[in-house]
Length: 180
Ligand SMILES: CC(C)(COP(=O)(O)OP(=O)(O)OC[C@H]1O[C@@H](n2cnc3c(N)ncnc32)[C@H](O)[C@@H]1OP(=O)(O)O)[C@@H](O)C(=O)NCCC(=O)NCCS
Image 1: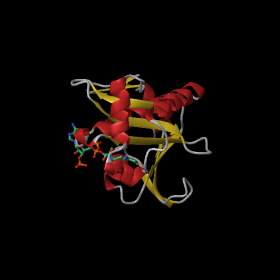
Image 2: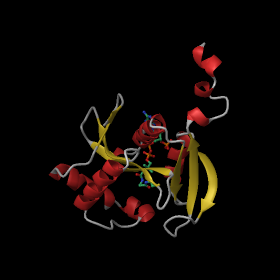
Image 3: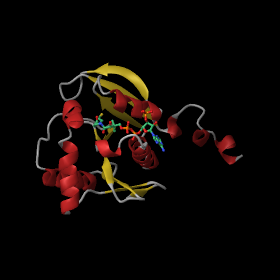
Image 4: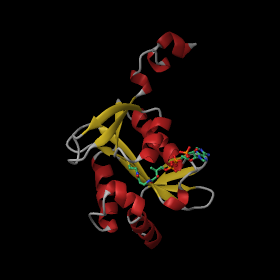
């Protein structure tokens, strides 16, 4: 579980309210437009996510719960890119929870967790027309690397962020400055 002042990121469960919210989330027209239709029942998605997290502790797929209201705003995904050792970050908000900064905040929380675990870099794949999601990437400080067709046989805008520990002139890598 990860917590901030506003958000609690916690695993999805098989509770009926979670299952209903997840099904509703993945059925939203804006999600189907950019991410395609649901490929499996949501209960199986929850099982797959917990299996993935158990197999690789860097992975973190969580419900974004708004602390003040208890509403599940959406989901945040931090997982391996297909066929690679690189990590990918992604987000989905229910339309009733857009426009509050929840995706950016949840993205920041899972990216920072990954960096704390020693992950050196993280990527995001966004379809070219998904401008809102690209704005989330930019707000997170991710660099736009251009377009790629390397994944899922689809064209994506590729975004990238390097761990602060590996950035040149990083405070964490400069012992004298880190001590002062
Ligand atoms: C992509 C998606 C997550 C973006 O949602 P979003 O609400 O724009 O993103 P955030 O939660 O980070 O909110 C940022 C917005 O909230 C506003 N905001 C309001 N209060 C805020 C606060 N306290 N803190 C930060 N931002 C705040 C920001 O100004 C920003 O609005 P703007 O882009 O108009 O300037 C959402 O549109 C979505 O789920 N789409 C469908 C699924 C999808 O495409 N997923 C991505 C696949 S790559």
